[in-house]
Every structure is written in structure tokens, then in C-alpha cells.
Length: 246
Image 1: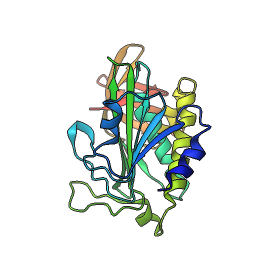
Image 2: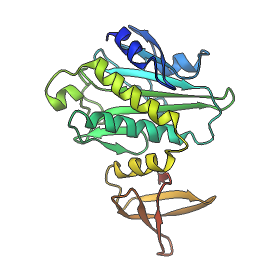
Image 3: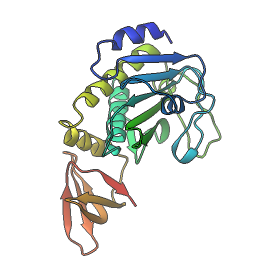
């Protein structure tokens, strides 16, 4: 990774414009959560020796993959929006390479039914900061024999990917969404819904006007709205709201 190329390209970003790079690091998330850095700082590593996933699961992070985290120093009321915007940014970046990934709730990106990306959010409300970790299999050889099959961009497109170009595209997409996260909230959630793996027939829960609606997904519409049948058989059409699988 030519980190000078990346640093120069993102230097004029409005939010994510500072980067620290390591040839090897235990965990980029751990590094940012245990140290104080300016908001918008990115920590990236060629290799993570102790990469983390949800609920303490390990994340194999070999050379050729993209492993990075970024910190936002602000008390976040709705941390789930960082999962939403990060998922959408990854999907849209992968689409630039002719790929059609889907989001597997809550924080995985799948391609051809195989995992290509994982996202980990760590919200530190006490210190008013949130760290988002993103791991993408780009040119690395994904490990085999895991509970879930994995794939890389290189394997999917059958050619080696320019890692700097991929990284810059993804960071700039993240930066644009972070800069206007409030104004883009509904648009981002709609994109997040439209790019979900098939959830028809799944039980979900939605918070609307401080009330919880639980039921079965009947239809996912092209505009990103979802029709849910509650326990009484009533149909609710939700749009611009995050749902949670039950």
C-alpha cells in the first residue's frame, strides 16, 4: 500500500482527512479506542494480528486486504447509522468494480453468498467517541474452513485490484456520507434496505414514533420502503427507519 498516495488524496476531505498506517498492528479498532486522536483520524494496517469482529469473534486480516478504522469524537445518539452508512459506502464502492454485493444484517457484506466485508462499531458514549472498523477482502487470500465461505474482490473480478484506488474511493464515499449524515439519513437507510439480502418472510422489529412495531416482512419495495404485517395482521409500510431482525 502506497500510503502517501492515499494520504494526499484524502487530505482535502471534510471529515476523514488524517491517516496513520502500520505494516502490522493487533487491531485498528483497539488502537483508536485506547488512544486519543483528532476526530476523523483513520488507522490502517497492512496486517492485523488480532482483528476483531462482533461479539469478540476473530477476523483474519492478511496482507492484501483493506483493514482500517476511523474515529469520530462526538456523543452519538444513534450509533446504528454508522453501520448503515458504512455498509452502503462499501456496497457502492464494490459496485464500481462491476460487483453486486448485498448487506447481511447487521454488519456483513456478502458477494455470491460469501463474506467479502465485515464492519464493527464501538460506541464509547462515556468518552463521546465512536470507532468504526471496516475489513474488506481485496487482494488477500481469504481463509478457508470457516463457518461462512469468504471471497475477495480479486477472486470475484479475476484480476488484482489497485489497493490505493479502492481505499481512496471507499474513504471518499464514507467522508461524503459522514459530512451530511443528518441530511442524508433517510436516503442512506433507503439504500441500506434496498441492498439487503432477501429478508422477505423474516421477523423484524421497528421503532416508529417511540413505539415498537414487530412483524413479518411481506414486501421490500424498490424505493427502499418495507411492508410489515404485525401480529394483528395489519400492514405497516415503513421508509427511512432502521429495522432489526428478530
